[in-house]
Amino acid sequence: MKGDRIGTPAQAAGAAVFQTVTVARYGRCDTVGAAVLDCLWYGVFGPQPVQVILVHDRDKRPMLALVTTDLTVTCADLVARYAARWAVEVTFFDTRQTLGVGQARNRTAQAVNRTWAFGMYVYTLVVLWYALHGHRSGIVADRRIHAPWYLSKTDPSFADMLIALRRTLIAARFMGSRPAQPTNAEIRQVQRAWALAAA
Image (cartoon, rainbow, N blue to C red; front, side, top):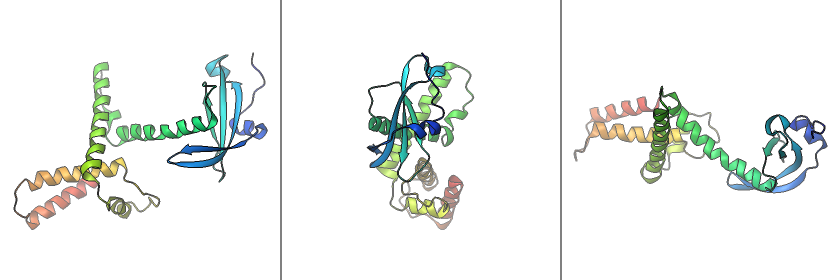
């Protein structure tokens, strides 16, 4: 049986009782205020009970509202699970936007399945190559020079990894495997190729 509406998360927060909870997320432990509401989301889950967990950070950022059908999970575990999901979402974004996997014009189910799997495979290869061979200490500083609006950038993004790989492949293509030192013309040619790859 449906009860009274609890309203929007902001409205529900007005009557909710918040408790201080320590949550592990994004590589650190944070103290947040959290409230748990047992209710029904009848239009989505019908008569199945759900929990709504409302989370307020200490610095008064916008409130986070999480809904779960797992009634045994603790508030701290659900917030940690939600935070862990962010890395997965970033991977999906990079695969679609940077590698262009979502732009394939496939018409058969098998082609769609293969394209997505191949895109994830390429993504994995780029990250592994970068971790094993492509990382250098100044890459974030170089990127911040070319994109000064990233004031808080501390780690390389997937785009940085892909640029490093493209530059390496272009340099290998133009430089060949000769033991001799490159000429000035060859150096300028590689620099132009790097500039085009970074654009």
